[in-house]
Amino acid sequence: MSRLAQQIAFLLEIDRLKEIRRQNYTLIGRRQETDAEHAWHVTIMAVLLAEHANAPCLNLLRVVKMLLIHDLVEIDAGDTFAYDTAGAATQHAREAVAADRIFPLLPPDQAVEYRALWDEFEARTTAEAKYAHAMDRVLPIFLNAHTEGTAWQKHGVTADRVIARNRHAAEGCAPLWEHALQVVAEAVAAGHLAPADK
Image (tube, rainbow, N blue to C red):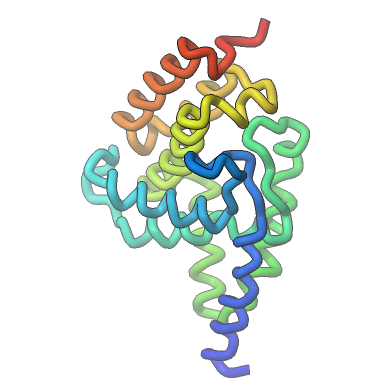
């Protein structure tokens, strides 16, 4: 298979991401967003808010690539809801198996590059990965807060769980995390998010 044919085959394979439903809801239609919509939205968010990143010399292209590919593994592994503790226990293993299948569909050099970017995002040790993770963690908070806590209420999520799971966003973008904490407090005050487990 030619390089171009491999790349096109990969592009056709990742079209499946448009069918993977997440637990977050869109603001207007109040339907579950897809992974593809999430990837687009969170990537624009990262570009737009780059001036607020903790790292002063962020490689934004690397961040963009990470965010565009970080959920491709959900084509095989499915979306694991952020507050599903049982699903989280097997999430990385399931997603790693998916990465082993999906990225090698690319030509070898791109397969290596994209798998390394996925691993970097997962490891969250570089400035770019920390910033990308901050975007990925905070955007669902904003969506939930602006849909009257639809997904939070559906799954019985509480404010302490939202904060505990997402607090590492501060490692990549402290000002955004501070804003997210205000949004969480406002959601609790509005009755859209329960304050804490009793």
